[in-house]
Length: 259
Image (tube, rainbow, N blue to C red; front, side, top):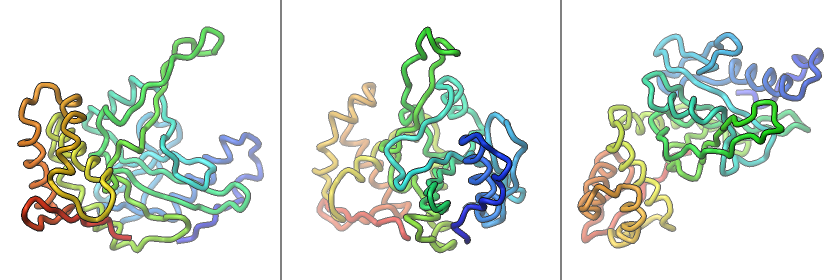
């Protein structure tokens, strides 16, 4: 994997947005692979409304977002809020590639994938409508709030210029596949518990540590009157799927994402 962006492609471009698009899309086409099956990706035609890349073998689709930055940041700017919510709830929601690069050196710094299974309405932040002076008055955009995506849903292929072994990337991807069959409230619960576990410092935690999120979870799931029962149920799922290890007597160990 070559982390250098190909500057020979941008000699005829002046727009900063076009330059960024050409550089990053070409890099993904030449260097990325499908985390599901390991095959190379092909590029969709420009201006396709949903996705940018396709795996011709397993038909997984991927959308690319990129920015000139040394860090991933807390949020990713996306398009129209209503369109994004509609896509999340549809059957053909693409996976999400996010790439950061250094504009001065034209090097890729970070490249990660967020599996589509982690996209729920809660992670989409609604922006304020554009003002009356804007060309698209009243248009409402959105941000993807990375803070609301569990660590397991941020699978790095490149992290601070370190290339992660392909087998490890694919293993981390496979661990998330159980979410594929979870829908609506069921998916929301398991992602919420994953996020709670991530907020606890250290490798080890207790059931009481998770119970401290009871009020937070009650606000998110007001129709559920048995929050602690639900917490224990979701922890059992995470244990069975290899995300945590039960040590006995209400004690758990977080099984970190490999790199």
